[in-house]
Image (cartoon, rainbow, N blue to C red; front, side, top):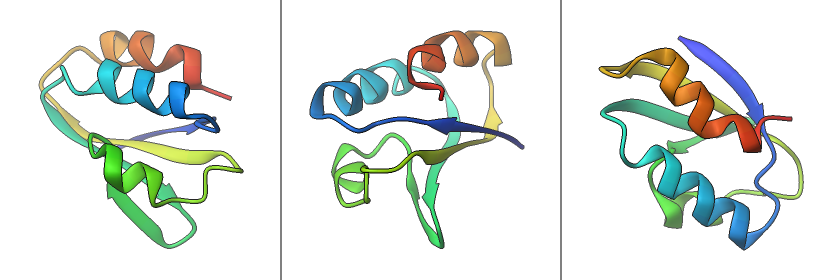
Amino acid sequence: MRTYTLDLNSIERVKGFVTAIEGFKGYFDLASGRYVIDAKSIMGIFSMDLSKPVEFRILETEEKLSEVEAAIAPYIV
């Protein structure tokens, strides 16, 4: 499992992140405290407290890790 800290503090950033990640096959989570949601769920993301950074977890992916990292690079803190 790989983890990254992301800043998704605006509607535009959330939309861009979901668009970037939804094309990848695999399991990705976002966590804030004990609250964990599917990173591809825009409704789930908007239910989180986005005023502070969230943790992005790559649990499993069929893609090259470098491709996923490149897609989320604009959102990494």
